[in-house]
Length: 349
Ligand code: ADP
Ligand code: F6P
Image (cartoon, rainbow, N blue to C red):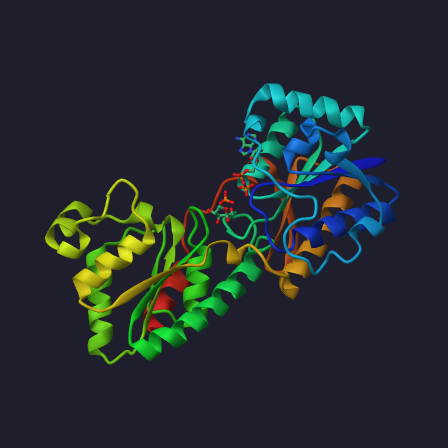
């Protein structure tokens, strides 16, 4: 291959810039030119008012001073039309028109679905896992997960201090979409008392019981880590709970939030419970050293594979070793929680 393309897509993740830097520098050092597409698949579809805003030739200098920066300088987007065959075919035509012979797609499972669609049209692609969610089972870690985890831990430490002073319980909501990995790892790293994740059914009643027990055992603060997707695995009869307590009468059951769940836990346990949603703080910030190293290794690996005309793959890391497998297998999400870590959280709380 003489020319390849690179894009970042889906939710941004710290370390995406380091991955783009690695793709660009490794390509140039292996005799290939690189086109950087902006705003995910939108860039290939050339959807901006000005075409030079959709893509740019990358030089070694384009990626200077980027390895330590959060976000993605290529920008990212959710391009929903890309799910349609008509747009996927247009993308392949545009790539060929630009002389781009292979494409590196950095993102999560949705981005991999887009890349796989191009693969099915006979176009060479490589997927690099870039998402804070760590929801791809073929790789031990995705780029951005370690940074998001460390940010969440830093925030929980602060919340623990104020909760301890006030002798309150605190429910901290972390991101992760349908995956509980950020929650489980944050809970273990912060010594949280409880964790609620989408992969495991749970009830408000059992959580409230655990809070009550914690208070009886003399705990001054209780930290509960709530994965944003955990509302979907909540099996309590919320209507019955809300009808029983006056403080919960106003809650609308159409869209349950973690803050409302915290109110229910307070009502059932009789212990003051506050809620904090960490939100986008977890997506921003300078990537950790671990994420920069992972991104650099995966970015260069992707280029080496394309240079050898090996494509249709997603790259990752398992047991410290770089791995590459069919992208259609890699885009399957992680459905099983890490039972060992979950047991450890309970044993150590
Ligand atoms: P992530 O890559 O972080 O999982 P999304 O699920 O939002 O994020 O997906 C990112 C983008 O990937 C989407 O906006 C769309 O452009 C593309 N994409 C997602 N699903 C598909 C699909 N089934 N077919 C083609 N492209 C898809
Ligand atoms: O996939 C990354 C992620 O941050 C998820 O954890 C979260 O559910 C989602 O993206 C939020 O998406 P948006 O950027 O559209 O708010």
